[in-house]
Image (cartoon, rainbow, N blue to C red; front, side, top):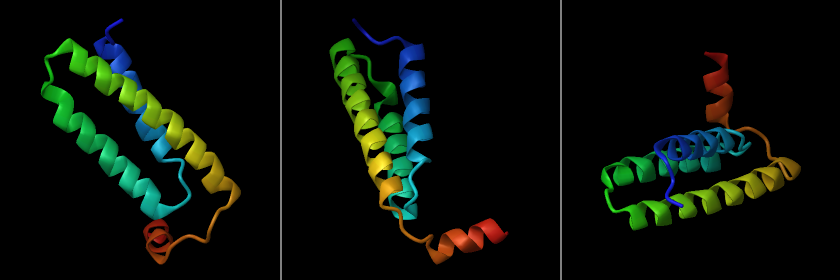
Length: 89
C-alpha cells in the first residue's frame, strides 16, 4: 500500500511531537532539525517506491524516538543553562 498525503503528514506531525518530548536539549533539537530536514529534502519525490521506502523509514524512526524518549525520561538530567535562560524570557 502506498502512503497517502494525509498519512505522510500525520507521520511528520507525530515525529515532531515525539521529538519535542525529549528532556535533553541537544537530542531534542537534533531530532527536530533532522526530521524537518529529511521531510524538506524528500518533498519533491515522485517515485512511489521511494516514497514508500521513506515512509517505512519514518515509521521506524518514530518507534525509535518513542523508545529513546522513554529511556531519556527515566534517566533524566538537569536542564542546560540555555534551557533555563529561554524559559525565563
